[in-house]
Image (cartoon, rainbow, N blue to C red):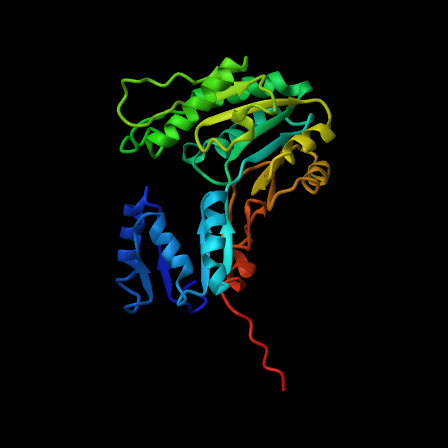
Length: 310
């Protein structure tokens, strides 16, 4: 927004305001007064900003439900919107993939920031021929990743951000266990440990309609679903009403790109997941939002074209 010559008002999530407030303070040591403003508060503050006539553009990252509310609040003033909304990203592992070679990439695609990322890998589809091998290799990688307080530099995974999200993840995993799914790793948080640390959890032999698959868990629990044909995998991946990101894993780039082209998502990565690059446009499909961030196209979404003809 600033690069395109705009002034900006930033409203952080009410759950995580402090880091944003600190960042804005640093930026405002260099920026002219009034160029960059920060306002913290609850959803009522967000609604007032969305309907305010002095604001011409809204860029929002958050849930699909909150995005719908912003659309309604901003409708009377016909604001321009860029909405990056909820996702439930699918990954498809093709039968020619090397389980050991892709295991670490799969892990970080799913568990970066302890799974608390919109474009994290949240449901993994693996062909029958290599299903057990992928499960074994992924379990070995995940089991070696230490979780704990971030002040200990040996830890690579931290806690969930709040109790409500912790409960969502725990309840989804327990429901999957009760349905007969197989817990490969995790699913056993220590109730005596301070903080909202939920262990990295892998769930196998789970039905595609299970809530852990169909709902965005936004945490460290990855369901691994079998498929037998490419058409079935694509049908599974496209079954939901969201489409932020997705990935295809295979050494055959031609085959991977053919599958990627059939997936309904704003970005489909090949042999990686969630690799957002500020030079490359990023946005969602279906109910994962509209508009673009990043890249030249993202910059263009922060300006209003004017045609002077004559």
